[in-house]
Length: 193
Length: 151
Image (cartoon, rainbow over all chains, first blue to last red; front, side):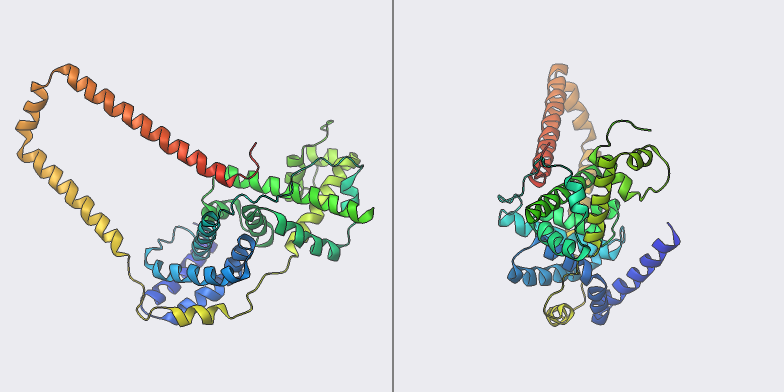
């Protein structure tokens, strides 16, 4: 185990022990430390704002109740992200939203040099358009792409959170990036016309 | 140097590795306009994702959760203790029964025709294989449910 791993491990252990001894303020610290990650997962997987609030409460209450069962096999934040992912996934499964109907299919772009057109996009404009395009992706793709590129999580952490094999995570990320690039190129070309 | 165009996967990997150095993909990208444009597009895309705003709730999440926490500190789940209890009891009962009735068990196998023993073993193996196949099928089904773009 590396020094940095030992560091987070000890910090996590201290927080968990404090909560288990009855120090609820330590749980507030856990929430603050993991809020950004959990919020990302909820916002990427759940589109209905009303449900997001319920799920956020559900996630942290589950984490609190099961804290004694946390065995420090991964970071505490990864464990809570795992709960967040599974809670959102169960919600989507119940609502049968895992396979959205209105997906943008990958289509080959026949016009010349879409990538050049895309690279001409202004960064600010790109960020705005990209947000819309990311929102069009299936929830799992949105989550993976955000956690990997925005939250800078590793493939290992993504497999721990989602429970998917590493190969599947890599394959989903590859497809998500390709779809985004193609959709953005197409979007830019429409605007250009 | 690679003379054929790079695949999307190779270009993504090249950009992810931030390869400015000289390698097969890098040498090709420096000389190939088409692949170089693709790499530039991916670079922009990754920067764009990094610059996305962090979403936030319009309420104080910590406050909301803290107001709902049960007053008692969380304890180890009782279900786990129950499971351990049942496993230990089952092992103890089986062990004791095997010890006290070992002669009868030995006699049982001696009195059964070897054909029946083989039948029993074959049945057990067949059932195990079927169960494993079923588990594998279920696993594939779950993975397929996640895989929105199979193939």
